[in-house]
Image (cartoon, rainbow, N blue to C red; front, top):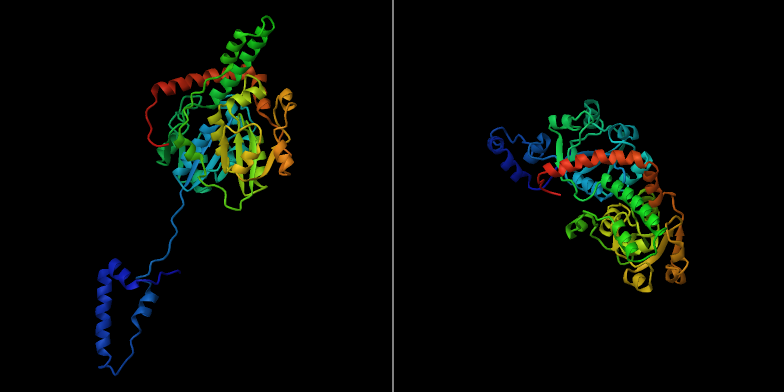
Length: 422
């Protein structure tokens, strides 16, 4: 048993005044009686009390609160990341359940990303401590007991937007009934439904533009098509949100700073894996995120799908990223390298570029001339385009899924109330 040794008498007086007084009186009487009984020894009082353990408080560690939040996490975005950030703030350890493909199909329609890809994305978030694969869509009594007993979960978390089963019942009804449910604020301006809609819209606008160009010369009407293709985001970026996602720490004086740049559009498992590989090459990972105009010029008019601040938050949420440059220059210059004290510039083998532009100039010419450039083997072949193509290949299925979800989201916005804290 561990004890605290300082100020034990004062602790005794404060916590056990009656007992302390009684023992002091007894000790006084015994002390006075030693002369009468011929000097019979009395145990030294502090040792007596030490054996009794009365006035010593055992050091106890504060119980760590474990919270659970689940989701499909399909087309992972900064809204998911912010939800998990809020959930982590309600406890000490965050356990995340990733709903199985079968459950998503049964309740929402076909997922875009595989279970393996979704697990990589969730595990890559800085606020996540543990992940449970193939979680059920609804919190059943059996699964809830498993959470409480096996995973030692204290509270189950969900957003303020309703999560209804096909029969119209609340997926979190049992957790609420058990008194182990807590609610967080939904992140406005983005959802997986919204992103699917953007991709479908870009696909439609691209086809319209191609049809238009086949019958008309390029001119003002073509510019109108470009404007039409641009999806207006509902996200309103604030400095507070960026601070919430940021680590808030710079590199140490002798840190090896690794730099990687790109669009990081439609943040996916390939991005997580290449960022992980880059981080392992140094002490501090700095990520440059190209602005919307640069991405559009490089990848044609229908990109980016996610706008600059949306992409920045998705990258900042990754556990392997220490800092980002929002609107980084396309060419890695000597000034950038000097300003951020960059030791190594890396780039993945899998990338999406407009060949005509990449042939014009080598944007890594400076770090190559300095001997600080390294080409990294991309762990995954997935790209933003390949993810978008999955949706376009199943156009009708996702269109039907989105129509259903859009209706429920309209209802949420019509009935929503203010929820404090985010």
